[in-house]
Length: 275
Image (cartoon, rainbow, N blue to C red; front, side, top):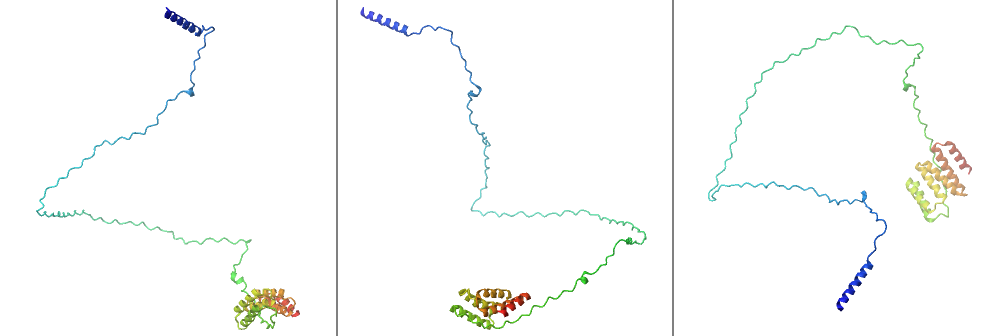
């Protein structure tokens, strides 16, 4: 009887436990039923498969079979027969078409037009009006005065010889070039004399004697304007050397005279005599 009691006891405990775990009956109104409908923008869109490329139809035409060429058998031991080209066919000339001569068509000339025998009348010249002034036509070449001959150039005077000695403080190289330039000037080599004096001026650029020698050479070369400028430069550097200043004013006077400025030439001559 013990196993039976145990089984009953276990069954009772199980039934009590199940009864305790079960929920009681619901009290109150029933729960509301909510129906949810998806929105239009949240509808599930079916997946679209990518477009397939168009299918190119396969060429179903059967291949063309090549025709079989049949050659006649020829014995290699026999010589081949010569092939004669076909004779050209002579062309028969076509008959010339019958050409019937056509009579020339005579051209009819129109009758000459008759012009009335009336002498041509000259255009009527309107009578002159009394208030109009008559202008005589005169040859302009006879009115123009005769071309005036240009005035003769001013006479060129020869400069008096200059006996100015070189200063004692002149550098030896510059003094040697100045002596060489004086020899070239006396022999008529004015270009060589000017080149020697320009070289000496590079050695002693503030020596008034060298500027005076170069101004005299330029005047003898015919460059009057440049000679006057060089003589003025020598006057600025001459200091108290009156003999050098007088020679510079003589060069300036001759330069102004050759340029046509006689008033300035006369003034320069006065200063050359006064100094």
